[in-house]
Length: 450
Image (cartoon, rainbow, N blue to C red; front, side, top):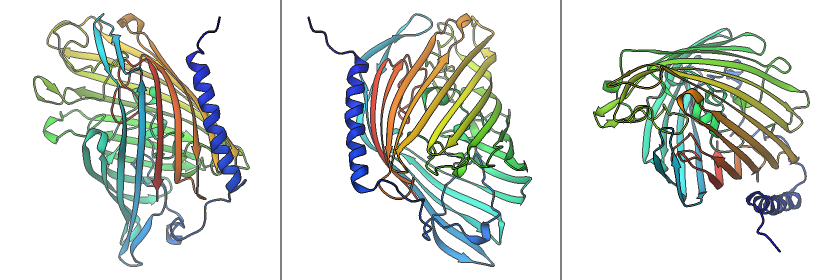
């Protein structure tokens, strides 16, 4: 008697057909693409030969188009990023049970969006050491538009000082590598544990060849959508280091994947620690605006009833540590990152059943190019282990995906991936996940960066 193929058998069949079609198209066009062209669009300014990455700002990997250039006054360059994405989260009707035993709905999606766009004006003023960036960032999926930027002075290779919107740290992916990831958004564990972007003073430098540091003082974990009047007088801190011992680099801005095709093994090891005193950031007593701090079952910590029925947490400490390691060699990329986060020092309007919550997690990402600089295949798994003493369980995901690069650059690509997720602790219309989701997410996207 025949039986219906399992989900993963069906996924595997669809994936193999899609990958074969992509491979066939790529082979027909060109079996091996050369490195990125030295056109004026991507050629670096020779006066900026000693320019150091800002490492952490939502930066623009690439020179962009130079609009104004005067050797005595400065330079203005235009750079942009755009993403169109289709996403389908299945099954359509889902519920999950939170750590308090309450059943909640899962609001899945299926839509096509001009998902986000970023327009950057950047360059230097009077001296190439004085750097600036002004960015308009918009996400149609969340109906959110933000204007941000930074100013900084690059004193020497050991010490650079900046102020503006940046991250305190907390994850490999927030340190300037966007959007050069395997997919267009972060994997589940990374999204759950990372810090975000806020008003920050930060310094960095290369103390030895390939050895970098980052230290930061910030307003909070995330200031996106938050006004100054919603902030407290508490300040967050972040620090980290990363070491690239073999080649002293790991691709542009520490990018994921080995599109550059390293002939010498490139290695990277790093860590990041952040701490922040978080509050509800409320506009009124019933409307907390802090959406960065989630529990391992996806509930927002500052929503009423998140830790105990009828009780509202008003303040809490966030402290987290991440450790990462990665390699690149001849189109092969392998990277892993481990996280630990602790929430404690709760201030609430009633009794809460825990004094602290400690969550752990990790991801492993791997990729290779069956067709050099044309077709990239990758696989990912990530896990979040909620604090068992607090009543939380574990979440996990498996991803298979592909990137197709139709031009002679990694900055134009088509991405397709399938995610099998169980009990997502992450929830946003920005990324790939909905809180409590168990099922399959399909996505196809096209992106451009210049």
